[in-house]
Length: 455
Image (cartoon, rainbow, N blue to C red; front, side):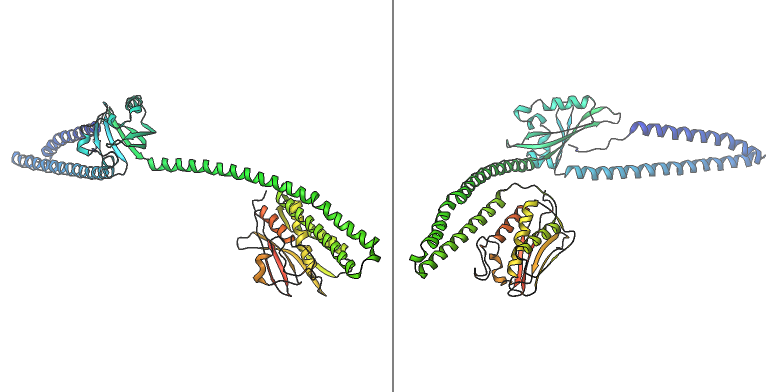
């Protein structure tokens, strides 16, 4: 069964041959008429004329033979080139990984390549006795009639997804492309089918859809869990801010009342104990406030805008100077710093970072705090707050951003250890990261980034 053949353009060939024959006949007639007259003009003697006539005949035969030789040689070369191209094209089509077949107008298979053998399981010889309907699933038996009707209706190319059945009964998903097959006169003789197996691609696509659905379900579940956790956190925050504060205020109030009303009845040791109780109540109150602030930074809705970070840092520095007007601190704030962030949350970041720097430089005679910006290797802004204060040992850098983590004693630098944890939460909500560098006694630098996509 021939898989592929080249249809010659016989009509055009006949037309070309006719014109060549007509041209040759015209030239021959002109040659015969003109050459006889020329011989008569050149030679008067009959013997000489006869000799010239012989020479003329021999020359005509030689010219005709050369002409025929050239024509035949060109035709043979063209035919050889065409047959070589046909063989190469036939080899490519025969060995294609796609199933390629040719049907006649009755739906019978007349050509079948190796790709079809591999895909469907029938050999080329077995396909000679095979109708294409054998390849169709039960629910698609009318497909070929519909396809042939479309081709007969004038469609040159038809393509669509469909299914095919293999010899062992498996169903495969294919992408079918059908084209017209015509003879040399342009008359429709059949249909060429190219079928690409997309079973694996469709299975992968279905798996992606399944995984996406599973992911969406997980997101919904996590969202519900997060909503539950937020509700519990709201309840906890309410308890902390109301239920715990009431007994704390009672402890503090009664302790102060004892100191004021019963001081004469208490020993110095007892008075010292009560003073320590009131101080502990104060620290506990501050801790509750810090916990609530940390909770708010996690739950508060964000409204991202372009923030003038230089102005925010200068305002924070001004507020700190107002609390301790006697301190001499040089605060350098770079000009034109800006960031895309939530204005309220970013202000909380600067309050904590500049406030920390203010606190940890309190034992320096010449305190310097610097707020600025650098660029990383990718050209993204990295904001920093640097000081020349107490610093820290880098082996403990990982503890800095956890709640209640302190690297200095309460007597050295007061605080609850919530500030940097709050900074880390806010920076994380903005898609950035925060890290610290420092040396004991030489100061510290806190750097942070904000996601370029924030907002």
